[in-house]
Structures are given as structure tokens and as C-alpha cells.
Amino acid sequence: MKPLKWIVLFAFAVSTAFAQSWSQPVREVDRPAKSAIQGNCYVSIAPGEGGNNSDCSLHNLSGNLVPAIPDGKALVIENVSATCSIPAAAPFRALNIGTTSMRTDIPLITQGTNSAYNYMVGAQLVKVYIPAGQKVWVAMGYQFNYNASANCGVQFQGYLESAQ
Image (cartoon, rainbow, N blue to C red; front, side, top):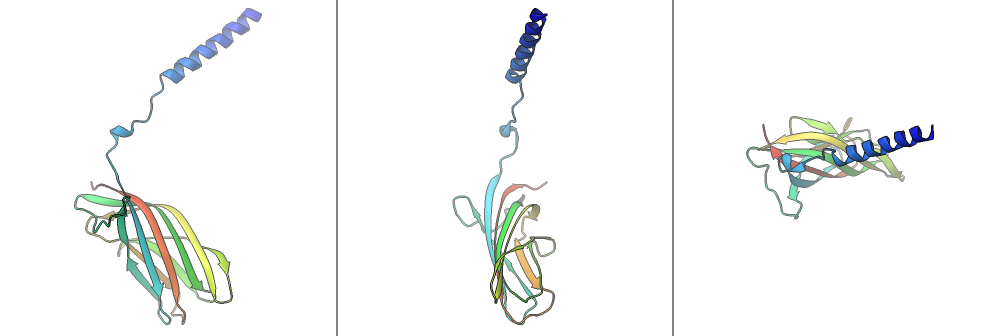
């Protein structure tokens, strides 16, 4: 009985070692190159306004400004984060990112508060596609006009890929 146990263990060890030596690694070289992009946006609502929007600046990883999404490319935004100060009693509606015609909400949670403001943060994994010739926009708004200012800073990361 003991020799059978050793044979089974030996066979298992050999098969495990064989399987590990012949596994197929992921080959990143087979995938098309991506150019990393990061962006910053700032949007505010003045007292008495119901909302506002703003376009974003784009930078490569060296910090150089990317003036526009090049022809034949699309920007894919994958990660968005935001910090906002919203009046404590304000009927805050939404903060979102995208183009002028298509946007994705950025969910916010209250991180702290005082008698005047709620300090909110948000982070979201997304897939937002911005085609060549379009700008990245952020927008925020109240459910109705409110007589106090609100401010949000938005940061995002993504990459340029070939538009197909």
C-alpha cells in the first residue's frame, strides 16, 4: 500500500511541475500600444445658478498638455475621482463626466460636514469613450437654483486608442 501512495504523490508532483512549465503567459506585445492620458477639471456653481459645466485639460504622463484628441484616436477614461464642497442645505443633483451629448454620473459620498458645507468625495471605475474632435466635460447641478456656491475638482485617468 505504501508504494502506491508514493507513486500517486510522485505522479501528482510531476504533472504539477509539467503544467507550470508549459503555461501560456499573457503577451502584452500582441496588444496595440496605448498612450496614457490624465486630466483635470474644475467646475463651480455661482449663487443663484442651477448648474454649470466646464471642459477639462488633458496631459500625457510627462505632464505635457495634450491640446485635443488626435484624429483617428479615441480617449478611453477608466478612472474618475472627485472632491466637492456643496452647501449643507443645497438640493445637490449630480456630478458627471463625458461629452456635451453623453455623460456618466460620478457618485459622491459625504466625507465631512460643518454648518455651511458638506465635503464630498467620489471615485468610480468607468469606461467613457471620447471621440476625436470632442472635449471632455464635467457638469454639476442642483435640483433647482440655490443661493450659495458649490465647487468640484475632478481628476481622471485613461488612454488613447485607435478609433475603429
